[in-house]
Each structure stands twice: as C-alpha cells, then as structure tokens.
Amino acid sequence: MKKTPTSKPKLLPKMYCNIFGHEYQVTKKVTYHVKEYTCRHCKKELTTNSNGTLTELTPKFKEINAILERIHTTRMERLKRKSITSSIYSQLV
Image: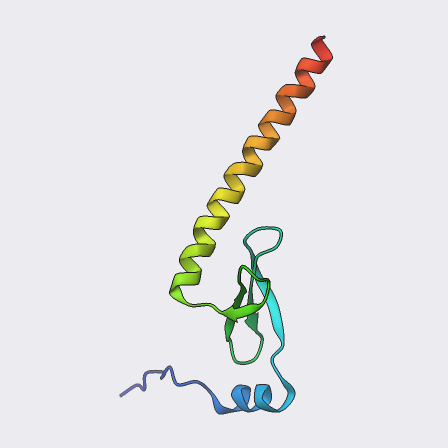
C-alpha cells in the first residue's frame, strides 16, 4: 500500500518566516506598478493594492490583476502600433 502525499504545510518554513521574516520574490509583473509576490519559504502570496501597499492575494485580487494585465497589454500593443504608423507617416512626408 502506497502512501499519498498530504498537503499539510510544513512547520519549518513557517517557523523560519516567523523568526526571520518573509523573503518575497516577484512572481508576476501585472503592470509597471502592480506586481505579485511569493515568499520563498512559506509560499505566501501578496500583491500591491491601489495605495501601493502589499496585501494578501485573494481570489478577488487575482481577478482584478488578470483584468488589469489584459487592459495594460492591450494598451501597450495599441501604442506600439500607433508609434510604428506615425514613424512610417513621418518618413513619407
């Protein structure tokens, strides 16, 4: 009989974070100002809110970040196309 792995959080990473503090890494850049972070040890997820402070990454914030990322990439693509067409136009004139 094989044992299945349990999904219990390990005590050591939590203890490390309680003693030394979290060690956050950027996992996703949503826009220039909004990023998602994950702790290297305990895997706690955070994001920046509208005030620029770190808040816990809840499903609501995940949805907000996904929509914000889609809007940001669309806008950047549109600006890129606009700058290309304006540079072609300036060369013709």
